[in-house]
Length: 118
Image 1 (cartoon, rainbow, N blue to C red):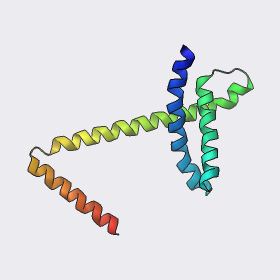
Image 2 (cartoon, one colour):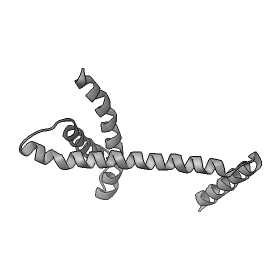
Image 3 (spheres, helix red, strand yellow):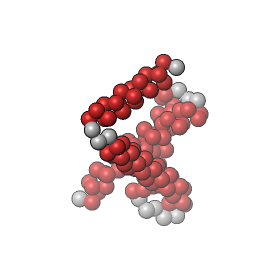
Image 4 (tube, rainbow, N blue to C red):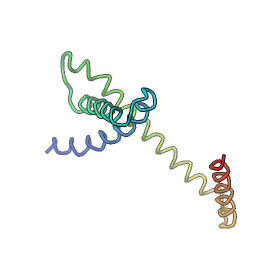
């Protein structure tokens, strides 16, 4: 039963890590999409294996940095997600009337259109 729970938790962690690791690998190493995908899957697999098992000896020593990297990436992702939610909630409270709220979003839309045209 505990193995099933571990699998349910680690599959989304693996997918999240693979997606997050893919972009830096592709941009930093200038690989095509397929080699970058393979490399990100391998790194993510090592992270998940390191997080799921407490291995002893040389195998545990080799997987320890990958487990630490995977945990750090997940924690940073969660932190950024929480900060974005807090910012969104704080913006919501600044506009007390619907007129002010609509003016704000019209201004934001115009700003994004200007940035898009440049």
